[in-house]
Length: 327
Image 1 (cartoon, rainbow, N blue to C red):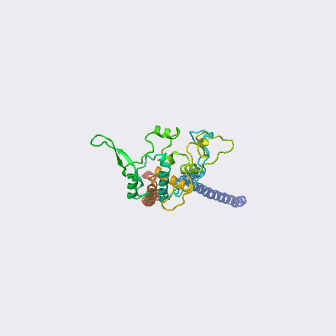
Image 2: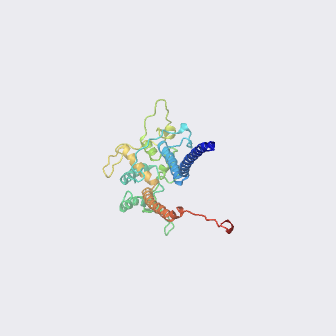
Image 3: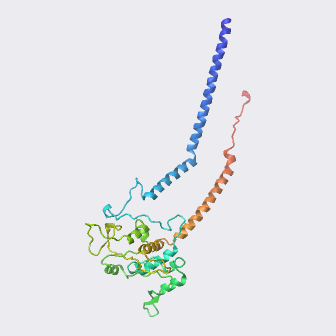
């Protein structure tokens, strides 16, 4: 009896110690499972996936913006590496920003440079006189410029073609009637149409500006063929077109000094507008769309939370049916 009394407290102490250890183990397991469950929920949430995707796409886009290409996607060019010209630097164009528009005074000066210098060889087939209205000139100014050009029209009542002054609906007249005449007047070289030249050349406006201002003497040992001119920015570094822009070549109406770089900058701005006449309107529409869809997204998220909050937060209890035998 004494032995039973002595060992009973010891057995109770061991039982109590074992029970406390189990309680501590359960508490630790519950806290660990809770933290891991919260972490797994965070990883599997849609917000986390969308944030990771947005960060990845943004990083790739920023790298491509800085360096022009991606390291794992090589660029494809029609020319061999030895045929590529010098890569043009990036210039701070006033319209290159997300919300920036064209400098319309520069477009007006650029059209003057095109008309007095470039139009002697290069056409602008996709631009009509009416496209200039409200962009660089007034209606009366454009009508006067169009009437200075004679267009063939007809036939008349006698079945003959006749010449008439230009109208706003007419497209700008090319300098040559056909491709053969253009090649014959330029020693076999075909001057390209400038309507989409900014979009058609790698480097865009930077390349055109660098090409117009990049004429220089060839380095020692470089042979320039007869009838060609050295320009490091043109593929193969030789170009049939000679330098055409010189200081004071034109006289701007607004008094802007007609330096070589100023004329090149203005004519490139004009050609950039010619390639993208919808540029300013597109950015306006894009800004309106961003504001509209941002507001709609906020409203949709609010309505979604309002409609689904009570459904997602409710608890469902199941009371199984009981039979009389188990009561």
